[in-house]
Length: 137
Length: 137
Length: 137
Image 1: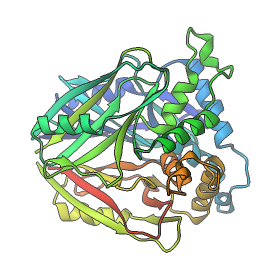
Image 2: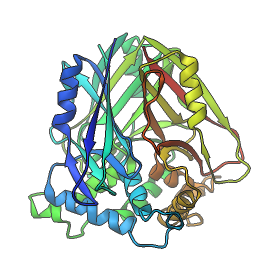
Image 3: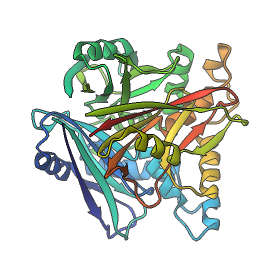
Image 4: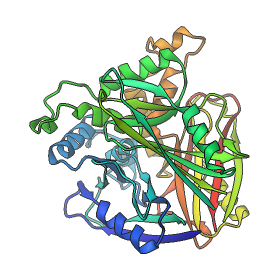
């Protein structure tokens, strides 16, 4: 069995930004030499998400507008009694999910036709990491 | 270490349908010969979910009514400026989760007494797939 | 390849309670002897969640208030036509997530600086389990 670990780094210009990372994950899978197994892709910061969905700008806009409705910024969150002002980012990342595990089959990510992996930043403008852990044969 | 990959296929009669798949997943685990490890069960389409919860029709009704409240169909979603009309299906699947990883212990799915695995279709009436990847010893 | 399985048990005094379990998971990883791999931490009951987020009491309060808004107790849920009264607990656990998979690197949980693992109980006051399955080399 092989394991292989790598990290992706992000420092977004905007506070909120969604970034497609399918190709970066695929490159790490290739570098791992694993041809059958699993790869975990997981945000290491708690105001960011990793999720799988459509690569379509309109839908990404819909996700962002929807998250603002369900987990609005600017409410008097208890978390803001600390030095923080980002409680909504913690809630938004919870809705989107903090990680995905993807199957690897015949040396490639075994994804459906429209599956794309995204990094969703909700409190950016600082350096953040995603861990990518490959395990298999 | 062994790996084993299989796929479940769905083509639901209704646009939205929740289908219990615990037994199908258990059969694939048995066929894999893996007695200790993990099995990933993941929707390969981005308007479907895989989740674990109760096998009780009332609760399934509650889930569906609740999803309609939080992610309603029929809103003027930006995604609908493409040929699509299913933005709500993308949001609903995000709330339910797109995959689960289940432990295998002593040759069986290591589930709690009420844990059942479900496929939740939010934009059906076409052929869809779920990947089942078993890994272990 | 090694596998190692253990269980954490909870019986909370309150119906709803959030409990940090990072150290318990880390101890199981150490006991497993796995130095590189993955560990699945998964609630075995369907009214409890396992999630990763901040260890800050204000934010935990915000999570609980927010869940009450999105998935209120006391509504006339269809599930309550059985003997149950906990439909909201099923919905809340779905929002928080029922499991996480954590990477193990160099013998330790490979977590970001603020990542903490939590067990979130939404229908407690009875004995519940979380399965912890370690797999790797």
